[in-house]
Length: 117
Image (cartoon, rainbow, N blue to C red; front, top):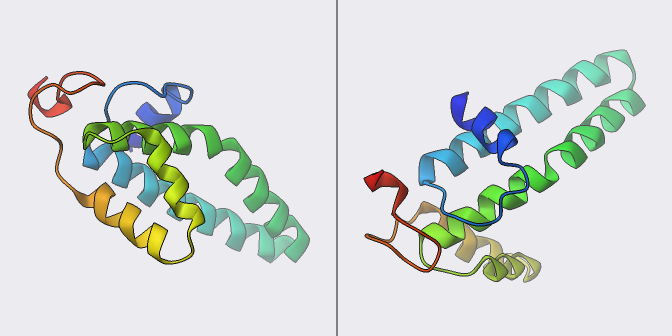
């Protein structure tokens, strides 16, 4: 949960690097919270569930974008590569593979390796 809170604190930080654990724990807790909000909202009323889901997605859009860009920086790629997600299926598969890659060792254009800190 600390990684999730840390990403929310750095919600507009698009520079630097993010470790795999920071990205994937954020993605995990993001999915869990979204599912719980949708289920609870649907118990009340389906439109409430949809509304809660949309509000939550809007609230975590910038933090999610920030951590994804920092993750791309960690493997030595520009954050602009996230635009690959606009290519159906293939783009998302490429991004998932890159998000699973280990950090680029040493320092790169976006800072020191967070594992070495």
